[in-house]
Image (cartoon, one colour):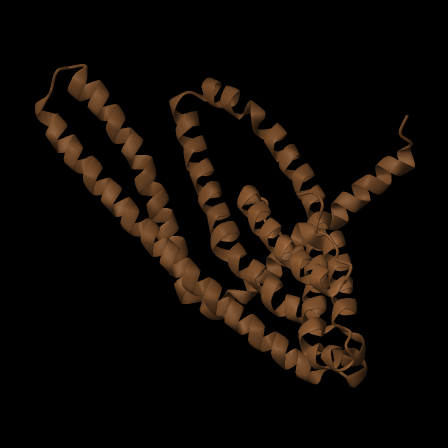
Amino acid sequence: MISPKRETSKVLMALDSWKANLLIFIRIIGLLRPHWVPTLGAVISMVLSTGFALIVPWLLAWVIDTGLRHGQFSSLLLATGAILVTSSLRGLCAYGQGYLSQAVSNLVAYDLRNRLYDHLQTLSFSFHDEAETGQLMSRLTVDIEAVRNFIPLGLLRGLVALVTFSAVTVILFRLDWHLAMVTLICLPILVLLSVQVGRRLRPIWSGVQNETGALGTVMQESLSGMRVVKAFAAIYTAARNSCAFLRLHGHLVYARPLRWHTHLRRAGYAADHHRRARGKGVKTCEGPRSL
């Protein structure tokens, strides 16, 4: 049996996570303020595209009910032209939405990079002594890229889904509120599942960000210290350290969607590495054992 204190702690953690997500969302919205003109254009294009998408089913219903059922075939040509025009306008608005949203996301990423660079210049020497270069590079590249992708793929698409859902809900209730209520029964379950998935993905994504920074640190140290490694003939020691790191973090290096292709390439690299190392009598290491 779960204790009340444990349930209370779970509720508090959920509230803290919700507040943190809300604060992050508000900060991202604040980044759009200097670029409100293209943002407004993207939102207007999104609303028009959604409206045209909702008109097409109504035209199809009119064709079936009026043209086919009552035999008014003369109106089918007019309905076909209306559907073509509506679909063309929808595609044009969708193109405008995608173009403007990508423009806004690139402008926001540009501003973020400049702000982060200026902020790094104001930090103390002790911070730069303790901070890892790979982590800073990860923040300047991977994290900013995630924010840039969130604007067209998360924010605006979320608005599209919200507008579409609201419009379809109003139409359903105007047609038959009984069937609309039956249709919306699954909505609380979907919301609950979405909250659960988001709660689980947040720590996973944070871990991926940290590991990506660690990978960048290893790459930076390996490349910047190459002259020192060669000067002290420590090439194979550095290679063993890199292999040990890849054993622990290889799942971040090798992509799962290209599984067989990745296996073939890795097998070729491993075979070539073993052949060269055996000729010099050096003990080699293996890459990630499982994907």
